[in-house]
Image (cartoon, rainbow, N blue to C red):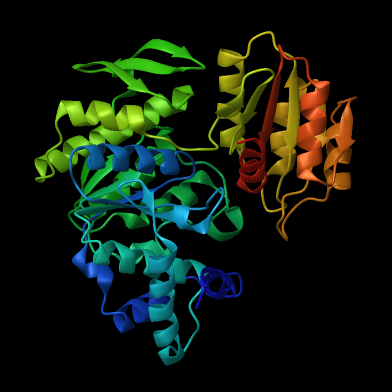
Length: 421
């Protein structure tokens, strides 16, 4: 088996026709000798910020000397990004070996595993083989019935910002979604919660109380911003003075505060992290595609915003970092997102718009998207079939003193990033 054959095997297994639940992943892992039971975890769920929080937490733990696994999704360039140890992607050789192990046992299952269940199993296989001290495990979808929730009680369960997303699967209110996310809280475990709306907090707190879990809230009131510009951010939190992060956006300060709280909880459980390691980990943490600057003149930014909460954060960044600049937007969206609400939010801020289509069966066609943009009052709208062409046209037509922002789907920003870098 070569790497392409391994990836083809993974992607051949759809999830959309499968009933949600943990029975398939439980059976698959039992056939693989339960690699997850030999590992310790920080389990992270949420609508927005869970990826950034995962990356920051893993970076700090690695700097503290712990062999740290990191499981995230989706990816920007190569599949291997989803499974990392101490910042390094799983090598092709190891990925192939793990796929071959999975492929060998799948025929013994009554029901075929989904793609994400296979990916989760591959991650556990690799993390166990690497003898990871701890694994930062990002939930795929929801929490309660997500395949990652097959793990036993984590060292820390983390709930980041919650909003309306994947409503077809998780429920049509933030309370229902919060309940699904809080499903990662296990009996007696430690929980770190991102402060947010009271109804969401109440839902998570109720689940924590029912499971006798110790709830640790993060204090955002203690954040003091010392510097925040396109070069990075400096802030203080409690007795930590002048912490530096390269990630941009006010929300990354909040995600950093959550990661710091996670590390403090872990330190009490034997995972000792010095202040020096914490500082290094914060500064080194990278999360491509999240308000990431690819070039200066014009300023070209890619952002993974794909739901109303993400757009709100993007607009906050625009106001903070790009005042007075004319904005060109390259937009590609998926049909199963709240795309009309997102367009309502973003259109008033743009001068020129390019409608593109992500390479995905759920993509909104360029003609439909351009019509939706024009219907909201935009006068300069162009539909472009080729993403590279859209990028080149935008660069040619944008003044060097202004800015271009591509957003709407990780599928388009990953391709743009690869092209420009």
